[in-house]
Length: 271
Length: 322
Image 1 (cartoon, rainbow over the protein chains, first blue to last red):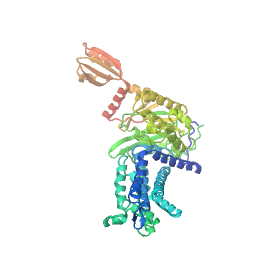
Image 2 (image 1 turned 180 degrees about the horizontal axis):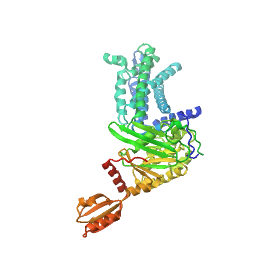
Image 3 (image 1 turned 90 degrees about the vertical axis):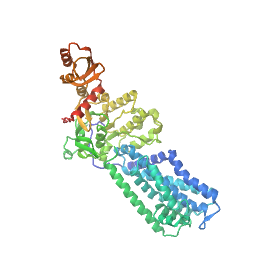
Image 4 (image 1 turned 30 degrees about the horizontal axis):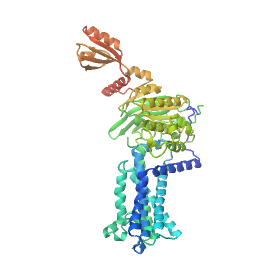
């Protein structure tokens, strides 16, 4: 093991699949731990949807119905969507913008880390926190809101919402490449709060003014929430295919934008 | 030893192999950030087993040079090679380690967790215990990064740079912000690595640090290399003498004395800078019999280094490498 032993290899790193898997798992584990211990993240991402649900779904309107669906049931898909969006955007955009802008990503890029492991870890973190948010809403609804649904419906609702983490993680990566360490969080809030409102996540879609409803049809949270509401029989009876298509198209656009940012960073960058 | 599996056509420069082979090089490299020319036709080589210090003031282009060698930046012109290939080559990154200036490292992870993750990237990482010992972090391994002091944070970054057991280390201002004791400790660690046959390129703006660590010093200022040599040679070039006296000779006359590089009025006295004091003193005494208060002192290293870099920016000269 002396420095004189300097053999040249090929352009690719020869790692065993087990070694590669280990890297991906560790990257994901530590990314998750990083956010789990970040109180600002866990509190803002978990507490808002839960607080809203407890207040508007359990305390205030528990005995009312929206379009034939009991409020505690109706609000799980709505606030679930809201929670998934926040968990996904903050886990991706804020971290990426900080890592890029404050030099940490350069240290990682200078190492032999497989670049894809970095992004996979962010996606993993989004998915896990999305799951936690949705399960928390379920638990509260079942315990205090008399929410009952079949196991199949429960699994389908959870899977739909958690799958919704993908488009918003993609959006987060795109935002993370085009915002700075200080502007990422305000930018996320500036986009996702109005977007959530216009998509009917706070005020049910049918109560929104007509022009806002027209805007909603173009917004990804609307399509995710409609897919989720359909599981509990409270959707707008539109084709689910259409919703999935919109979400898929949105994901592709965001990944395209993120890719531009990624390539821009590979060449010239900050300092 | 010296296993060499490399085809010579891959590069124009001598290939890796035994000690003395070029392991990192910039060839006529320009790097522009918009209108700012960060590096101007820089030629520069690091050979296996060497410790090279890239010495220069802030904004000289040191960090840019390091980032080019790490493949984090692309040159505007010229060629960058590391271990005989492109610096972005993933295989190269297995064998290089980097300590960069980072404004923020994820603060909620513990020292050992950071280390565990970075070690996993490498094929043959050092055992965690050895890395912690080398970086003086044994007692801090359970601390979260956010709870560490500035010097301790630098040591973690150093640990991450060495954890993969790399052959070639790039250290960008490794001791910036460290107190004297922490700096000496890190120097000791770098010397140990060099003793184990590692090649090290470090940047610094302390001549003293370059002197303490490097076999070879490359002085860079305003994007151009202005001097290069062993620490002793650089010191000889930079470390002059300061002559202080009270004289009736005019500043203009003093400036014209051969060997005088700088003249300053200092209250009633004047202060002259020169490489060698004796001929200047002789000349002064010959011209001004009434000269008084004569003092000759060695100029401080840092001061002399400053003179060297200022000198180059005034003349704009860029002596050629080799």
